[in-house]
Length: 239
Picture 1 (cartoon, rainbow, N blue to C red):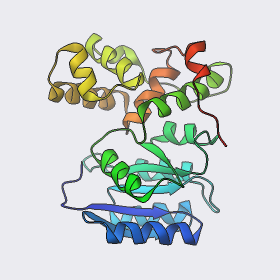
Picture 2: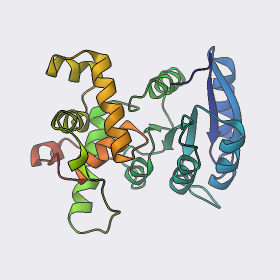
Picture 3: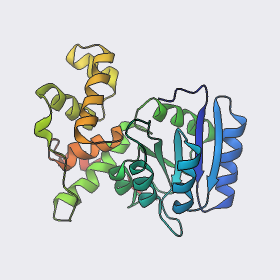
Picture 4: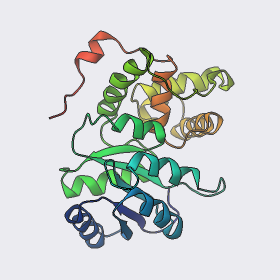
């Protein structure tokens, strides 16, 4: 979470009208400070380094460098002692084929471009607190659909070794992957919410993860959670 009084936001989109609308939204809203705007991923990487935003709202399809590669580079460039910005993908469809890859790259979640302004503000606040954007069930179903395709034979990067986790941490990761919030996990295990937060932090540190959404990806990709036919029938469809 940011230690500043305001949430610093970098807006990245190749469409001028969308950038202008988001910049105006964050300028007018109390508690937010738009620190800049970029029209492509390469500009975003440069601006993220110079402006130190708390949150980067980034489009996927852009010229020069797409949002997925920019997400990887921005997160990889952050010093280990510094707080990495929360990367939030902007997309037109909730099942955009690139959203899963963005989450895998370390994005903290995604927002549809037609999301109402008040929900965008609330979502950015949510992600600064360390949660996944949008409802965990939607993000989980999206991840399930693509994880199944990956396990069916597509090449993917090596997964973190889950054996380095304690049994309790493995149980917590499984519940994170199932979309449970920290309070829900605390209730399930009869723990304090602070204890659950500590477990999640340790899981992410041990596995080299940069976001809670990425932890969900790992839970499915590793086979810790197995998507069932009943779950797949509930997957949302892109319009």
